[in-house]
Length: 440
Image (tube, rainbow, N blue to C red; front, top):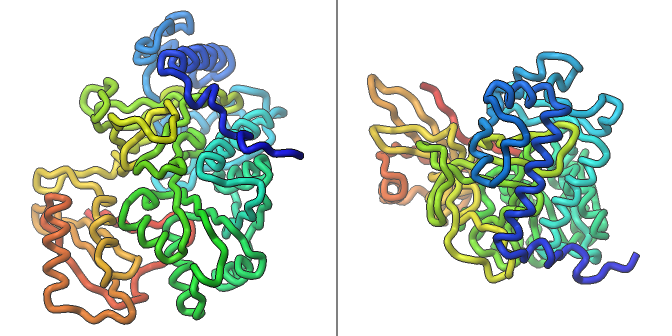
């Protein structure tokens, strides 16, 4: 097959003027509402309860009439027939060709049904992401995981094939063997979580392998958790690998909705030709203006087997006021996903997000890659403790703990206790890291 350089750069869609892009989104949203009202028992009941018919959606502001969907509703809806998808299923069970599920890190898993058409749509979304980040047919992409029921890297695998890349699945190998296989086969690109990128660099160091000099990785797509758009974390990964690191945002329920382009603008583009993503004020539920921060609510516009309307991602983001140099008209979220709204908590009157710790800790060259944030009750007060590992060759400088305390307080507005740990004492993770413990 002859791949042109414009194979997955679609200027017709990606540079549409805003008014035309919004007309496209409205047309697709109305089509999605008609589909779920006719075929999804869950959404028909939800819309009837809100006294909404598909014909009531005439403009983009009308979308606000439709109640948002919470993950707990999805879990409850899947307790009914047909098993295992329940009232969420909007096609016959015979049309389902792919099964995946959420990680269950925030509760019971949600089972996801996709038809063959849906799966083609999934890989098309990912192909758009990969092409925007410079992945090309000449790339040999290493994916260091056994995918299991985790959807993201399955979609990434097929999207690589769709745009013509060679894929090396690294599941079943140890971290050491994965590094050696990348070296042996001269892999040029890598897909993994930010946590595992840092873990592989640590293991390579123990093996005596200099990643930038001995491997050929030029670009990395990181997904599954925040980190690749946190400047200090991105800098650590890029310096250790000698590669460009790109962020991507997606969800089992939503799809591959956000991506960092090759310009690395410090934020994520919303793939607005395939998704309607709302940034809503957490108090009023109304869309924020450019420059405002809010909660992300997503509608995948082309999904059929198990569709979603206005699904609350529970993620927070800042809507950028500046266009991107890449020329896309898709809106940009500054800093990408800033954290989960369901993990925001008030500490002595200050709104605190655990992800706000990462940028501070990773900016200290004396510290290793692992840390923990622990929230617990001391008497009547909430108390935050941050545990950080020293690097193997670093000693505890007399003022290091105090400097970290000051930096954390300046960045978060919260007084935080600090505990310095020996290298290798905190847990390691491969796919999604869980560095936050709420013990209250």
